[in-house]
Image 1 (cartoon, rainbow, N blue to C red):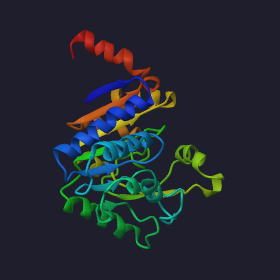
Image 2: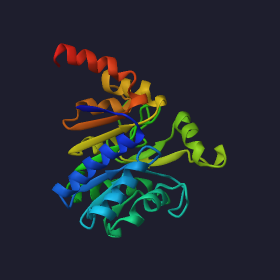
Image 3: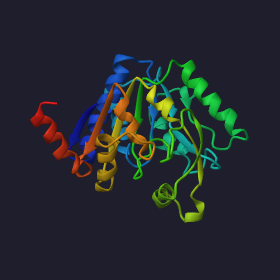
Image 4: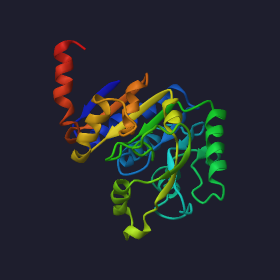
Length: 253
């Protein structure tokens, strides 16, 4: 695991964009795992800039989103489908047929989940998975639990997640209570993982995820077992990491 402390949100996003762009330059037909929320917004803006100014080409790229709310149609402004097209896809030259996002309006959730995993396998798996981390340690919508959920599945969102997501909705009642999410096994099968954390409110959970034991109570802690993870942490989110990293440097680890 490689841990990078960025000076601010902009620096974190720029560093992340260089990694994603580098993946595409090295493998034009890369399969990317995409995240939503506030954390990757500037990453997407930077990738759009590189596309427009330098010619970063997305025509062969395939994307799979981590998750989607259940019960929100694609055109709903709070759906992750809308988020991805509004903030990213509409401004790059990716082919619509290469975009995969779980269907939040599916009538058969189990079939949708199995089909999503099959599509990922059919494309050869995810080359680079972008992740944020929730205040409770979730990655995707894999919430704290007594076990790790392996594959794409229906999730009942934790109250803490509902509270955190309520800032995007007019009322608490509008916030979805369920979602479809990639599972931990699906995420861990990605060849490379890029985890981003920004804001002082993430300091405690990112410390737990990287330096405490591996437990489904902090889902992101499973990333300690992955062979190729880069963690980019903005300065305020890294305040509890710095002493640990200094200790590791002193001991030569």
